[in-house]
Length: 104
Image (cartoon, rainbow, N blue to C red; front, side, top):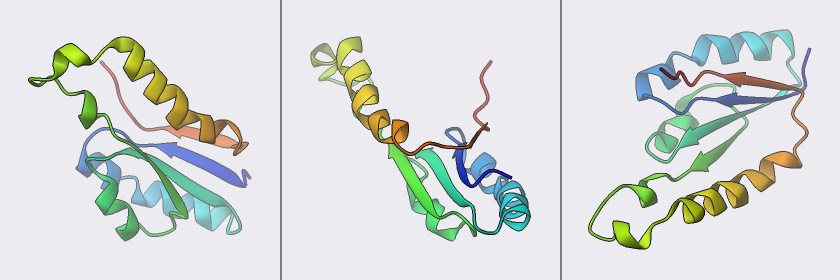
């Protein structure tokens, strides 16, 4: 079983909480595994309450929400933020990635 696991849960709070049985099952199958949860800043405060999560990575997309300063924002700035934020992930050598973030 995978030892270094990344779970993407970047949608709603309820969806993230519903990942608890999956996380528990992964930990039961591989007790020595390290489970990291990738979440948005909206839900980061809930992560400590989810059992068996060893680490979290938080992405803050709120800084790019359209507001009066939107003219100062650009897709290049968003891309650079993502590139810098995800650089850390590259070096962690995950054995398994589980994407629980849905899209239409």
